[in-house]
Structures are given as C-alpha cells and as structure tokens.
Image 1 (spheres, rainbow, N blue to C red):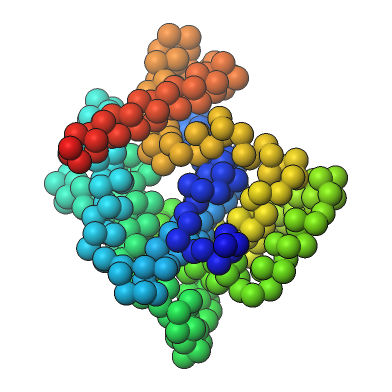
Image 2: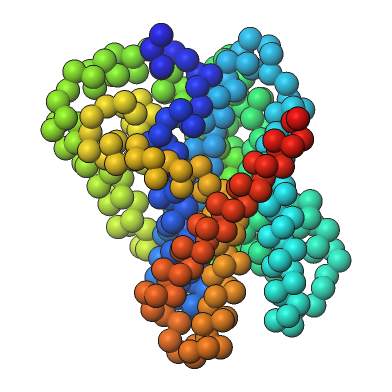
Length: 363
C-alpha cells in the first residue's frame, strides 16, 4: 500500500524528518550559545527551531496516532502517560542540575517558582522572571504537553470530521491572537509571550493541517510524479525548496516585529518543507540522500535530549573556560566545538540510560 495512505507510520520511519530534528535543534543550540555569551546575532535560530518542532509534533502525531483515533482504539491516558514518560525524567534531571548551578551563582531558592517548574506550568504565568528560573528551556515541555492534551480533539475536528464551524472558530482565534500580539511591544513577545501555550497550540494545529494536506488525494498523484523524475531534477527542486524556505524566513526576520517572527513567519514555509520531505522521503534527490544518512538520523533520534541538556553544558563550560583562560576568550570556535560535542555525548548517554530503564520496567 502507498505510504501516503498509511497514517499509522511515524516520523521514525521517515528518515528525512528525523534528521531535520537535529538540524533545527542545532539552530536552537547556536542561538543559545551566542546569547549565553551576550550576543544576539542568531535569534532566528531559536524562533525557527522551536516553531519547527511544534509544527512537526502536530504532523507526526497525526501520522502516528491518527488511525487509532479514527477507528476508536486510541487510548488517551496511555498516550499521555507515554509522552510524559519520555519528557519528564529528563525535565527533572535538568531542572535539578540547573537549580544547583543557580544556587552556586547566588540565585535564591523560590518555592513557588520551583513547584511551577516541577509541574511544567511556569509558561502559563506570562512572567519573564518565572521562565528564566531553572533551565530556562523547560517552558517548551509545558507548552508541548498542553498540545498533547488537545491533540485528539484537534485531530477529530481538523482531520476526521473536518468541522467547518470549528475551522471558522480556529481562524477567528488565530486572527484574534495575532491582533492582541500586534498590540504588545517587542520585549513582551520576546521575553514571555512566545512561551504561552494557548499561542503555541496554533503552531501545533498548523502541523495537523499540514498532515491533512499530506493525506489529500492529490498527494498520491504528486508522489507518483516525484517517482518519475530524474535524480538531477529532484536534486535541483530540493535545493530550490530549501534555499527558498531559508531565504523567505531568514532575510525578513530581523526587519519584522516580534509578534510575526516568533512563529507566524514560519507557519507556511515550514509546513511546506515538512510536507515535501515527508511525501518525497524515498526519492533520489541529493538533500534527501543527505538527510537519510544514518548518522544524521541517529542524531535526530536524540534531538530532544540535546535540546534539554545543551543549556547546562554551555553554561558550565563557558564558566570553566572563563575561569581557566579568561572570559574575554570565550568567543572562539574551540569552546563552541567542545559544547556541541559534549551536548551530543551527554544526550546519547542519557538516551541509553532511559532505554535501559524502560527495558527493565518492561521485563
């Protein structure tokens, strides 16, 4: 059966999407590395990476769980427990480490902030101070889990019933959210509104809509057309797509107000990018071949661990480097390479530990 008609497949069966996780995770890494040094020269990477992950999550969850929702075998509690099992242990580990590092740096313990962070609720407070307590990265988990809570409902409305009333209400909600955001100053968006889960669920819904496009009848004919093309044509087309998406988002990014560039700028380009590499994952294009390399797929598989651990690694090794060689020398490629390598190694080790733990629990 054609893979387009098998929504039970997941992103783990589409190597290109897995590799893209690592590429966008590295964009977030670069953004945080330089911002940790006091330079905001690649804020694009943070906004682009986070938005990509929300859109991709909506897409791949629809691909992996859509069939069970449609046939009535979907188990909501089991679904949430599985997602929580994946994200929560590392959340507690990184938060504990970050909290200890903060105390060493002189940050006072706050019971309210700690409780909210432990339960991944800090992003609902719309407080910059609350978000920066601890790792400063775990807001993503709370917003993502909020999307998980709504996923079955969104899937039923957008994919199964294709409820026009809900579609109209969602459109109104998006326009209202954008209108409210446009009235806020840039610092409010950049400091705390970007993490607000009811706003991030829009990115997630965009991913579900992209999946609806992926399962549309014309996609079957499009896939057949792709299969008939030569390697040269597909390679040229892929290069055009990737360059166009990068240019259309990166070039205008700095000149746009924050309410557009923190997410809406990426909705259409990234949806089309995910759609292309999902529907053409078996083609002969040069970028598809690159993204299908086992090393990149492997790194994509541990991208969540890299995301959660890289902030701690950067903070720790910038501090160590500064104490050893002086803080005026921290902006150099050697430290950058060290942080990347150690972030990936730490992610790999934690992934192994979690895999061993799951194996023992299943015995």
